[in-house]
Length: 113
Length: 114
Image 1 (tube, rainbow over the protein chains, first blue to last red):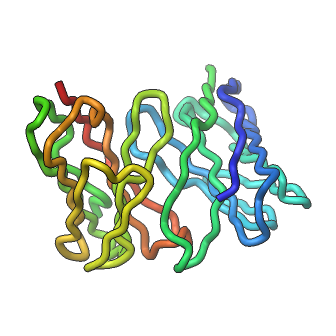
Image 2: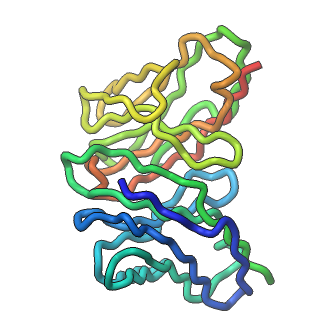
């Protein structure tokens, strides 16, 4: 699985968009980008994933650059409840590729009132 | 739906004691996983079960054993606990393995070994 690099911490004002970057310059063509978050002391929660097209769901948007070497998770209107550690994970998605999710240290996002 | 449940929530063991952490899911998922998270670090995979009847080692399997009791339940056993196993243990499940589907996590078991 490709290695990812994320800033250790970020701050965002409540109600504003939170843009969390992730670098994955060694990503392979068949590797997906996944985002999970972990609110203090809880189990991680899946947010979104994508291969090369931008993706949007009820929680967030995922923007992947054309060369796929980096991506940005966007929380459009951050709330205090979005304060969490956000993990960017890159891995192959297939039934035969194994099931490991490799969590790095993530980005601590703090949403301020 | 309760999702993924774990028992106990907290446990304190003395070095050398044994215990089993229980995990159950009610989402009819095929794959289940055990992770550990040490303070300030990301999760590391201990063991996983791609389907009922199969188990495989993850990144940090030493000192642990697992049992996939049935499709719903996946237990993690520490035969002789060591202080290095002090951690938060998370169980997760997904429809199938291989990263095709997202993993759903339980609330965790906080284990302290003295």
